[in-house]
Amino acid sequence: KGWEQRVLSSASPRSSTGSTVLVTGAAGFIGSHVSAALRNRGDGVVGLDNFNNYYDVSLKHDRRAMLESSGVFIVDGDINDQVLLKKLFSIVQFTHVMHLAAQAGVRYAMKNPASYIDSNLSGFVNLLEVCKEAKPQPAIIWASSSSVYGLNSKVPFSETDRTDQPASLYAATKKAGEEIAHSYNHIYGLSITGLRFFTVYGPWGRPDMAYFFFTKDILQGNSIRIFEGGKGGVVARDFTYIDDIVKGCLAALDTAEKSTGSGGKKMRPAQLRVYNLGNTSPVEVGSLVSILERLLKVKARRVATPMPRNGDVMYTHANISLAEKELGYKPTTDLRSGLEKFVKWYLTYYNQSTVN
Ligand code: NAD
Image 1: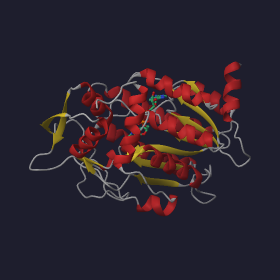
Image 2: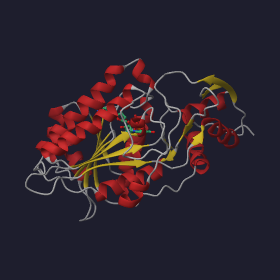
Image 3: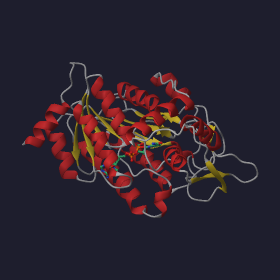
Image 4: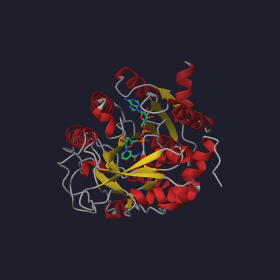
């Protein structure tokens, strides 16, 4: 009973125009920021997360504590749990599902391929099955990834570019997710928007990502490996600051049309969209390290290493004109100022001071 009550109170919007959103992966990096932003503007938000131990679980619990202090309740559960999902949809009429739960990371697939199938394929289908039965059917906004562009060498990446050469199992599951979305849109009239995020970073970030563990290793004096491509090729990422991504997510939610529930036969077909959300300004990994060195006031011990074949791609660069045009998306944070905010958070969170 107490549990249902907390779900209900978390789900109620603070204004009459507010949406009611189920955020999966709400204890994750992007999910916690999106949940906070939705709550701040008055939407009803219920989180769902299985608190898995892919990385430091205490970070997830701290994000949860932060959200709960602003009135967002996170249900501890798995997107594969159909009974739980049905129960949630019986308590709350969600207008939108912001689906951010996934097995993220590229390299972990070499150790644990099953977790990508469980969360990114089975879990996604399970969620769509419940959404398709829900009345009303919610519009779904979900995280795809820039990794779908894989070994495509034509940059910047546009939504219409080829996505048939995934470099990792992670990328393959995101690409498959886009095909699955297509089928649920076609058959059941679900409105589904996929967002291809490009290397998102910022406060409360993910410890498995380079900018995060470089910061730790620089502070601890450990050497850091910087991958280099062969034949003078550079490794670069279109690093995108979390606040810009959050704005893109909210804009996608606000422009998502309602599901038609008709498979598009009787009415207009339901919306099916895919957008790049990037920064349009790739930065070499070596330059990322230089920025961190300046912010931390510590010299890094760099070790140049040839790029292993581990699922990473050499280069990412988003063309965002579609998101600009249809969502009004406009990233405003450059890597230096974004990393400054990250480092400030990191030093406070881990209670370390810079070496002067
Ligand atoms: P994250 O790992 O911090 O967040 C994902 C959350 O989902 C975690 O808290 C995890 O516990 C939860 N989760 C995983 N499997 C689950 C399951 N089966 N049931 C319930 N909860 C589950 O990752 P993030 O960086 O916040 O990524 C959010 C989404 O964005 C993911 O879909 C990810 O693939 C995608 N994405 C992220 C980036 C990036 O740079 N961070 C880039 C492209 C795409």
